Image (cartoon, rainbow, N blue to C red):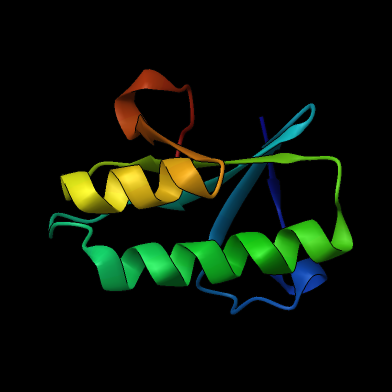
Length: 91
C-alpha cells in the first residue's frame, strides 16, 4: 500500500489516505467512538475523492469502535468499514 497526498483531492493535510490498486483507504486512528457526525464527514471526504477519481472504491480503516447506525449509513453510501489491524499499514 502506498500513502497518498490528501491535497490531491482538496482535503485537509491531517487526513490520512492510502491507496491499493483500485481502493482508497481513509485511516482513522483514535480511541473515541466513530459517531454519525463522523460518518457524514467521511461521506463528504469520499465524495471529494470520487469527484477526482471516480473509478475507486472507498474504505475506512479504523482502530476506534464504530456506532452501528454509522456503519449502516456508510454501507448505504458504499463505504466499507474495516478494522485497522486487519490491513497491513505501518503508520
